[in-house]
Length: 407
Image (tube, rainbow, N blue to C red):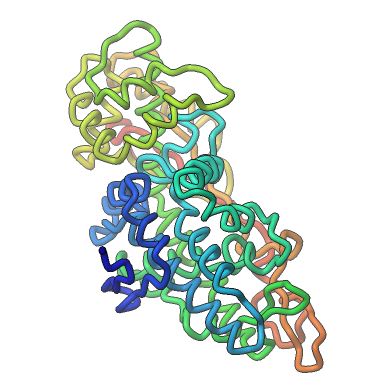
């Protein structure tokens, strides 16, 4: 008999336990093992060399934090059955199983109108059939249909174990200390009131620190101008490749990637779509970009060389949209320098928006000593919550360096 109660050595948390056999079985499944080959942060390692961790790492870390959170809630008097514990851990373990190559970067490019959460749910249902219904409660929790709301809030909300792990993990691997949140302190402040997740009022500053850390990580890491450009280029590469293939151009690619390059319809995913998708990972895209970098199509070759050789276009950043005349000037200069007529495809304005905390979308509640609940931004002790409830947008303009970088 295989010992399924394993202990995993994680660089962020130390030893992680697998307390239920079904968790081990799911981790061993090919659907989950594929996450070893899916980058957690896309092409971020081109900016922060240490950011080479995967969705596999993140899913295990989130599972560990879920276990820790449930243990904390039990100590505070919340009754949680062994079946509920197992299901909540399964739900968070599988919450990202539907991610495609390079995580968010190519979402909807391969499976049109299929967000990773939609694919995750579909794959969870397949696993549920395979494991004879053991994931039924986990799927209810994942969808927010389970009668105890706090389980879904731990999986997906403005303060969930998913965000707690990716902030701490991404901070660890990038070396950006601003994102290093105190997960133990935050989890120790979690509580349940009327079957909803709340935070003990004395933990307000830990929560504000978490929200500001997330904001800093977005602007300093995830929305770093070069990182945003790299992901934008990935989308342009796949879009151009599909355009060429559908026009009859033969492009070298793995069998599974070739399948999606030729696929040009929306609607329900067929069994063949799902089978092909679960065979795809980052290596298919990297292999293709290496080959396409030498292709005769100028645009495809240019985009691929930018990524593979890390020869990115020039970028400038602004708090407001760029002047249309300036953008047009860059497009005309691009046509002139490269001797092409579609230079506008090499000049891009990218808009990045962030709302650090929404007071309206499933707000964070504080539990006062007298049992009353108040929203975070309405606490008289809050310092930052009201000031980070406004959206912020930045604009990046990317254009070939040869067109003169000086504005």
